[in-house]
Amino acid sequence: MIEFLDQFFILFKNWLVGFLPAGLQQLAALSLCVTTIILAFPLLFAVTVLLERKGLGRIQNRYGPNRVGWFGVLQPIADGVKSLTKEDIVPASADKAVHFLAPVLLVVVVFMGFAVLPMGRNMVLVDMDCGLLFFYSMSASAELSIFMAGWSSRNKYSLLGAMRAVAQMISYEVPLLMSSVPVVMMTGSLSLVKIVEAQAHYSYGFPHWYIFTPWGFAGFVMYAIATTAETNRSPFDLPEGESELVAGYHTEYSGFKFALFFLGEYLSMFSISGLGATLFLGGWSAPFSFLGWVPSWIWFFSKLMLSIVVFIWLRGTLPRLRQDQLMNFAWKFVLPLTLLNLMVAALWRFMGDGWLRWVVCLAILALAYVFMCRNGLRRGQIRPRRYRYAE
Amino acid sequence: MNYVFYLLAALTVCGGLAAILLRNTVHCALALTVAFAGLALLFLKLGAQFAGFVQVLVYIGAVAILVVFAILLTRGSETPQQVYSRYWIEGLVISSGVFAVLGWAVLGSARVLPHEMAAPPVTVLQIGNALMDRYVLPLEMIAVLLTAAMIGAVIVAMSKNVGTK
Image (cartoon, rainbow over the protein chains, first blue to last red):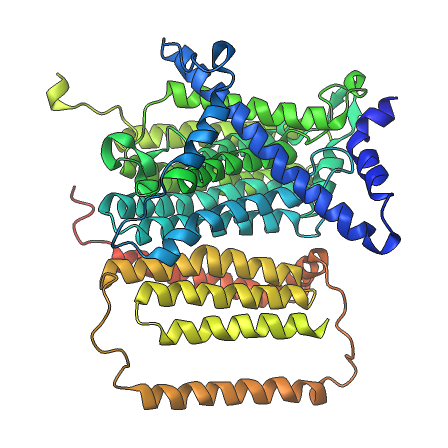
C-alpha cells in the first residue's frame, strides 16, 4: 500500500499507456508526463497567487480578495477569465514580432526547467547526466526574453526595468551557480536524481541532507538570497518597482501576454524552489526516518510550498533595496562568501569523519561572516542610511 | 536521423545570415542568439551534453546579453544609415580565409586520427577527470589569464576618482 501510494503516478501512467500499441508507448508516456507538468504547475500557480494575496493582506492588516467565492477562493478563476477576455494592446511603435515572442519564450524556457527536477522517487521526466547544468542554462535563457520584452515595447520604463532585471539576474547568477557547486563536489555528479539519492539515507533517524552541514547551511543561505534576486522577488524587486517604473519590463503588456509574464515569474519561482529543495533539503526524502511511509512526492511539494511561503513572508516584511546596494551586496558580500564556501567544502571532504571538521568548518565560516560584516560596516557600505528630509 | 542535422544546420546558418543581413542592430543580436542555440542543439545532437549546455549557459545566457548591452549603451538601437560597411571586401576575404582554414582542419581530421571511427560516449565525470588530471596545467593557465584580463578590464573601466569619495 505504501509502495503503491509512493509510485501512484508512475503506476497510473504505465496503466494508461498500456492501452496503446507498443510502438506508440514511449511517445505517449512522454507526452503524458509533459502534459501533467504543464497542467499541474499552473494549477499550483493559481493556488499560490491566492495564498500570496491573502497572506500579504494578512501581513499588511487588510482583507485581501474576499468577494469571489467563499473567502475569495475563486479569485484565481476570475483573474484567469479577466486576462483572457481583456484586449491585447500592442503599442503602435513596438517591435511586433519581438513583442509577441518575448512572453512565449519566457514561459517555454521556464517550463523546460521542470524536466530535470525529481519530484518524487522515480518521478523525473529526463534523468540527464548534466541535469543541474541544463536547469541553469534554461534559467539563463530567461534573461534574454526579459530583455526582448523591455526593448521591444519602445517605452523607457520598460527598457529601464529590463536593464535592471538583466543586470540583476546576471550578477546574482554567479553566486547562485557558485553556491550549488559544493553540492556537486560532494555528490560527484551533476544529475539531480543522484544528488537526491546521496542525501536520502539516515543515521539515528536523522537525514543526511546537505543543509545539516556547515558548508551546506552557508550554501543554502546564499542560494536563497540569490534565488530571491533571480526571480525578481521583493526585497530585490527593483526591475518592477511600481513606485519608480510603473511595472518594469511588462509595462506595455496587457491581457493574456501579461498573464504569461505573471505565470512565468511564478513558475520560475516554483522551479528554483524545487531545485533548492533538491540540492540542500533532500528533494523527495522524508525529514525523519520514521516518516518514510509518507509518499515521496508529498515531501517534495511540501518543501516547495514551504519555500513559497517564505518568499511571500519576505515580500510582506522587507523593504526594497537600492540599485547600488543590490550590486554591492552581490559582488562584495555574497560572491566572496560562496568562493570561501567552496574551500570549506573541500576541507570538509578531505578532513574525514569526526567532530574536528565540524569545529574547523563552522569556525572558518562564522569568522568570515563576522569579518565581512564588520568590514562592510567600517567602510560605510552597509550602514543604515539617513535621509535629510526624514529628520 | 540525418534530417535532424540538416534542420539544425539550416537553423544555425539562417541565424548567422540574419545576424549580418538585418538592418536593426538589436535584431542582429537576437538572430545571433538563434545561431548560438542552433550550435548548442548540434552539440546535443552529437551527444556532447556538457558542451551543448555550456554553450547555452555561456553564449545565450551571458555573451548575447553582453552584446545587447553593448549595443544599447553605445549607439542606441537606431538603424544606421549606411547598411553595409565600407570594408566589406576585406571582411569577406578574412572570413573566407578563416572558413577555409577551419574547413581544411575539419576535413583533415579523419586522416590525422584514423583510428577514432565512432565518437566515445563522454560523461561529465570523464571531462572533469581529464581537466583535473591530464589538462590541469592548460586549465590553470587559462584561469590565470582570464583573471588577469578581468582585473585589467575592471581597472580600465574604473574612473580615476573612485578612492577619493
